Image (tube, rainbow, N blue to C red; front, top):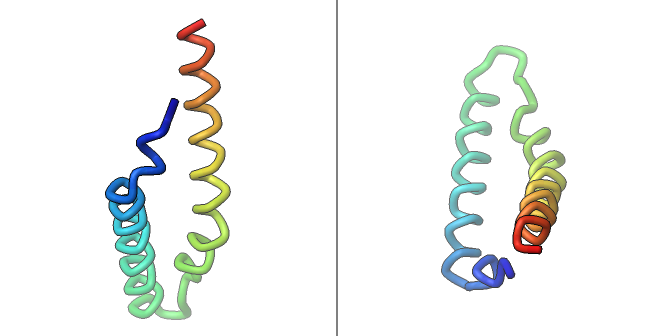
Length: 66
């Protein structure tokens, strides 16, 4: 289950979207007086969030199948 997440094309797409969000947050940081540190927060938050969402989805699907 969730084997598609290991597919290189899927990994590339996920990474591309995450990188795009990071770049957008960097632009906000650079163009906001005093800075917001949104990009730094994203780097700390995203890996944990993605892991949690994946775990919740996996647990839910397994429970629904059983």
